[in-house]
Each structure stands twice: as C-alpha cells, then as structure tokens.
Image 1 (cartoon, helix red, strand yellow):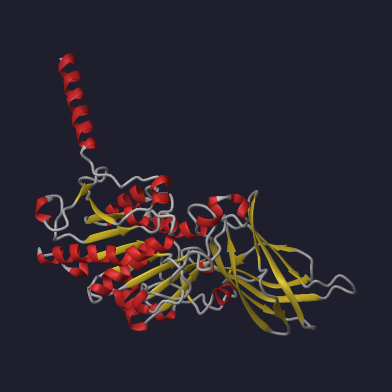
Image 2 (image 1 turned 90 degrees about the horizontal axis):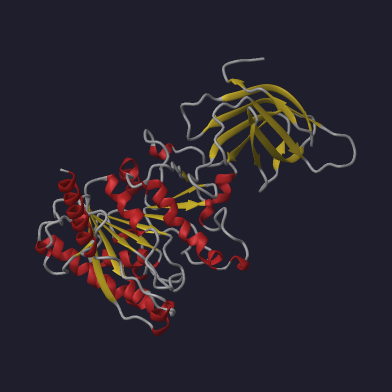
Amino acid sequence: NLLYVNVVIMVLKNQESTADESCDNFTDLNLSHCFVGTSLYVRLLLYTRSNLRCGRELNHHHLSSQPLFNVSRPTAFVIHGYRPTGAPPIWIDHIVHLLAEQEDMNIIVMDWNKGAANLNYFTAVTYTREAALNLTGFIMTMEEEGASLSSVHLIGVSLGAHLAGFVGENLKGKIGRITGLDPAGPMFTSATPGERLDPSDAMFVDVLHTDMNSFGLNGAHGHIDFYANGGADQPGCPKTIFAGKSYFVCDHQRSVFLYLCALNRTCSLTGYPCSSYGDFLDGRCLQCEAFKPAPCPVLSYDLSPWRERLLQLGQTKVFFSTTATLPYRKLSYRVDMVTWNQYLRWGVVYIRLHSGKMSERHLKHHKLLRFEQYTSTRLLAQFDDDLQHVQKISMRINTGNVIGPRYKIRLLRIRFTPLERPERPLMCRFDIIMEENMEVAFRPLPCDSRL
C-alpha cells in the first residue's frame, strides 16, 4: 500500500511538472535585447479560474482551438506599458489572480514585450498603434464567434492605457470599459483626444492618476478620473535622484499597486468630487450629493453603483489621499468649528487623536484658517492610522504670534464627522477656551450631549 501511495504521488508530481512545462509564460527579455532593440510581436496569454497558474497562448484567428476560452464569459485584457529593462512586470500574476476573484471571466494578458522593450521610448510609442490593430483584430474574431463587445474590459498600464484607447477607437467606442492606470505622459501631453486615451474610446472609461508631473499624463481623460494625493507625488516615494531607479518609477507604479489593493478589497479608497486637490484638502468637497443615494465613488473593480450617474455628469474628477504603505487608506474626519473670539486671528490647526498609549497627529499645513466672531470653519483632518476608540483629542491653533499677549480663541462647538466610517459616532465638544499657540486636550462627547 505504501508503495502504491508513493507511485501515485510520483505520478501526480510528474503530471504537475508536465503541466508546468506546457505553460505559456510572459516573454522574459534582458537589457541586451533593449540595447539592440526589439521588433513588435504580440502574444495573448489566457488565464481562467481553471488555469490561474498556467497561461495558454491563444491563436489570434482560431479561438475554437482553445477550449478554456468561453465567449459567453466577460473578458478582461491586461495591457502592460513600456518595458525599458525587458523583464516581465512584477504585478502580472497578482492582477490575474485578483481579477479571477471578481467574477468568472476570461483574463487575457497582452504580452507585447517584444516591441515595448526598447531603450528608445519613442520606438515603443510608435508600436502602440500596430499592437492596437493586432488586438483589435482579435477582439473582432471574438465578436464573430459570439462574444459581446460590451463585456470586454481593457486594463491598460501607462503606455498600455493609450494602446487600450486606440483599440477602443478602432472599435468605434463599443468596448464595454477601459481602465487606464496612470496613462503615459511623454509624447502624449499635447495629443488630441484621437491620439490618446479619452472617454469616447469605450462605453465607460475610468482613470487613476499617480504621477502627472513626470511619467503620467496630466488632465482628465475618462468618465471618472481618480487622483491619488492630487495625482502627482506619492507618499513614501523618494524625493531625490540618489534613490536610484525607485526615484523614477515609484510614483508611476503606485497606480498599479493601488489598483491591486482595490481589487483585493483590502483598500477602501473613497474619491470626493472636486475641482482641485487643494479644495479637497481645504474641506470644500466632502459631500457627494450628485451620487445619492449611492455613497461617494470608491476606487474599485465594480463601479456599477456610480456608472449611470457618471455617464450623465460627463467627466468627473475625484480626489483622495493615501498613506505610504498598505492598506493605503487614511482615517478621515470632517471637522466643523464655530468660533467666538474678540479679535480676528489667522492660524494653522494641529489636531491629535489619542487612544490609550497611541496617538495620531494631523497638521493643517497648507493654508491659514480665519478665526473671528461667530464664524463657521470646516477642515479635513486625515490620519495615517485608524484609532477605533478615540478617548481624547488634543488641539492647538498656531498663529505665529511670539511677542505680545496671547489672545484667546473660544470654540463654541467642534464636531468630528468620520467620513468613510459612517457606523462610528460623531464626536463633539462645546465651549472650549483656547490660548493661541497652546495645546488644549479634551474628552470628546456624543454630539447629542452637553457639558
């Protein structure tokens, strides 16, 4: 019996080994290929829930030869961007597995590494049109065999976002959805809508921006554009060139990692419609009246709760802030204050939340606030860590006054509203006397209570 078990185990291992050997993997090149330059060659690797660990290369013209492909299922295409080193993207396996968790679908990785791997970026840009024609022909074959264009979702990263846009344009905007992850900026900053990704390329286009001041494209290019930390510099990314490669790619790559986190449902990144990131940080855009009864849009795979309204609104910009590391979400409060002080004062607000031995600090640093008689002031307070049970709040209003008497600022009421945690109670405090530049601590009360 033991011998029989061992033989079975060996057979199974051999089967696994044989299966691994027959897998079709993403093209792996190196710097020597990039120096010489590569000519365009497109491969389409199919993954489904039954072969998540083993891609199958599809014949561009005969889908019936691949039994794993099912035209009745939705199909998501993953399209990478420029590959200056020729190595496979480190995130390919992750996004394939996470997409398979969303729904039962065909997941096709478009491998155009031969073409994207060139030290000359401009060569890769010129190949995007040709690669788009290749993918367009394949999708037309899918349609001929019974697939619906409305069930096709193109997910393009950087240069791949524009490639997806070209495919959508070729198909007259009948593709169901295009997701652009930080669409490439170089060579596209002055492009017309027909020369880059734009909302007309699909029935629905959503875009995430993380590096608009460098490798990403500035502006709005979808029905909804998500701007992480304003869409430019990302927290935790190097600020000097001495960090090496990370200095160049960190902000740009953050779009992929934020999207992976959203697919994994470990991040809940809420976007607030606003005209600018500055207005968002000033607390001017913390409500989503246009989407009621739905909540504010959330960066996610499933945007169906907001889709119809977004199509009615046209192009919508939404902003959110993140931390430097997983799960990226900040704890956000809308802070409303009513002041009653004799003299007009301008100041910067410091807020600290306390829970046991832990504390979290927020600095309102980008703009001075005006405090005067019976004035309502609103600000957005964001904290890196989520303190679930706030026991004490510390607050200081720094006016910069270092000589002369310290003026008093009276807060008739201060209210903390948790933005993404509606199940948590509002916290209030009433009638607090503060001296400028001096910290005061108080215990928050339920907002229906009084001292």
